[in-house]
Amino acid sequence: MKRTLYTEDHEAFRAVVRTFLEKEVLPHYEQWEKDGIVSRAAWLAAGRQGLLGIAVEEEYGGGGNPDFRYASVLAEEFTRAAAPGLAIGLHNDIIGPYLTKLATDEQRRRWLPGFCSGETVTAIAMTEPGAGSDLQGIRTTAEDHGDHWVLNGSKTFISNGILADLVIVVAKTTPEGGAHGLSLLVVERGMEGFERGRNLDKIGQKSQDTAELFFKDVRVPKENLLGELNGAFVHLMTNLAQERLAIAVAGIAGAEHLLELTTRYVKEREAFGRPLARLQHVRFEIAEMATECAVTRAFVDRCIAEHADPTGLGLDPVNASMAKWWATELQKRVADRCLQLHGGYGYMSEFPVARAFTDGRIQTIYGGTTEIMKEIIGRSLLG
Image (cartoon, rainbow, N blue to C red; front, side, top):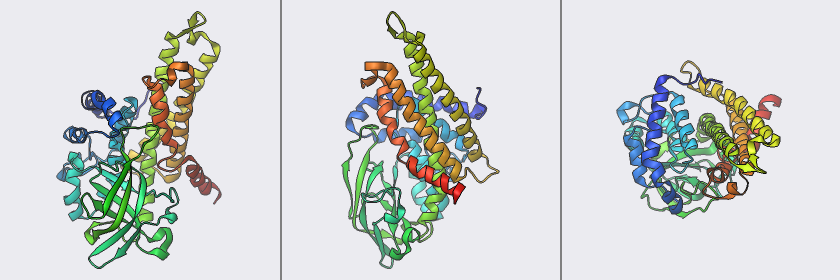
């Protein structure tokens, strides 16, 4: 079906993103994969190209355009290019809203220009060694010492953890408050007591630096409280719908791209004297994946349109959870089936399907696991 989601302006932006990927990302990507980290030059190039802070006000160097469809174009193109290491989506779609919606005027002046130029790489630190999806299990604490907080604790699996210059940390500011005793504190590079652990060795997305972070008596100025004191739970829940939609967008884009690659492959690859595409089983596999992708695309596009509608309130958490778990589980299934259809070649790292298999596996985990998504949906229906 013809997509009606995007305008000519969005497609023009897509061309800009593709050119950026061809010039600034893909020539260096193999080296980044070996290094386990992207170069800062790529972030600066993204800033110069206007790919960072698209929704940020122009006075701070941003694009001044809150239309989420531009973010979805970025997610689609980076996914199709198999280049998740440069985590622009995390920067723009997940962390950006915290800074634009919660920051004071003084904080905006301090942080947003670098956010938009690529000079300030960002991260958000929620997950702990003993607390993943359960916010009530967070043990990182911040004690009130008058004009500053004293932050102690550790975080793990933090994307952009090595490169980040600015980290939004979820910490317990009222111990007896449970999930409603948490606040967001912004920790900046160079603060005494803020240390980074190792760059974690993952099975996929090798060039995306993912780290452990440690905070030992870090003095965080009161001016670095982001949003309301003890308001982190509400702030996090408010922004999670967009985060999950962004992951869903990448999920369906990844599945569609793998289907395209595999459709071409089975037409060219021969077995038993004829192309694989002549085998009924292969045709059935392609037919099933194509149908699942088409149905999923219709739902995800509808979610994007609703979230981008300036007259509405954005996508609600339940539909965001549906989109996230369905699209990412589809991506996982399609990656597995496409690898199987590639046979032994699918197991070779130089084949795109092999990298997609490992790079995409995290999709059903971060941003809230599939099981958490189902719990949210189930509670909305059953109480």
